[in-house]
Length: 352
Ligand code: NAP
Ligand code: ZN
Image (tube, rainbow, N blue to C red):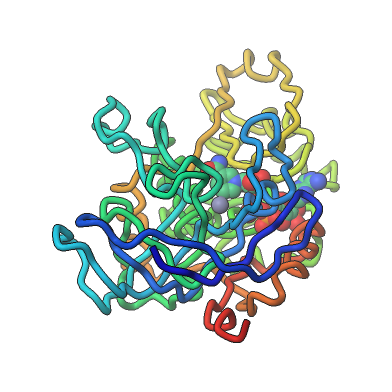
């Protein structure tokens, strides 16, 4: 075991603060990574504040962070994919059982024994896993990803969650040239969704509650931007979409978007408000529409997404912050005041 610097929350109402944690020494199949950047996902905030207490209660102290990019500092003797000194990345999962049908299908995110990067049982150390708001992490090589060399590292970190979470459902639902795609909520996930929908060749429409984001949405690749409070503009979109990705982190009127789907259209939730959303069944019956959800993506697809980003030069638009500003960043996230992902420069942790 060795000590690692980190930022942790002691309770649902405590600010994140400097701490020291024990990490395991790398086993034969482990990669030890010095973390360079970690993105801030809205899920970090949900979990730190125990907003998902019904689904996955938070165990304290909680060390969030699942958008990790860093440099390999040590590898176990059985590790084949990575060498010391290389750049590597870790996303939302650090383990799974590797034997179930989901794992065999490359869909580790649905494995009943999947282990999330933080707040999940840690079979090596006991207690729960600790995430990326830290100066280092040790992860089995199967769950470590390669980052294309041309990508800026601060902007690449958010690809590990915001990127794969939006890329995966778009691939699943056949987003491509000739399709009309909506993106609801222009935050960390939403802005990645716009970049992917545009890169995949779809006609892309953004729905935002923030007038200040309209010009940005166009710059990010939207063909059209609709203010969700503009009822006329909303109604003009009725029955026209093949696919809508909803990345909103709070309760909102989902039926307004269901009504915008064309025949056989699908709306997928990736946003995760804890409270149930009322869904009008009649909205689904007419036009055989479907309403579904999606969570991150498998390891192979995460690597495919990173390679796609390398080929298309796609990274997140980030505001790089020192870790000392993490609590302020959370307050801004609650107000939808982020353009469009915070990425923590982990060098700042050395000053603690
Ligand atoms: P974020 O950066 O805070 O973005 C959320 C956006 O939703 C905001 O920027 C805002 O966009 C819109 N919004 C916020 N409050 C709203 C409200 N009351 N009504 C309507 N729109 C509202 O969050 P994120 O990191 O992208 O995460 C979004 C959600 O996805 C969170 O719930 C997170 O936990 C979840 N998530 C799920 C997965 C998964 O695997 N399914 C993975 C990661 C995150 P506008 O200003 O444009 O309106
Ligand atoms: Zn996330």
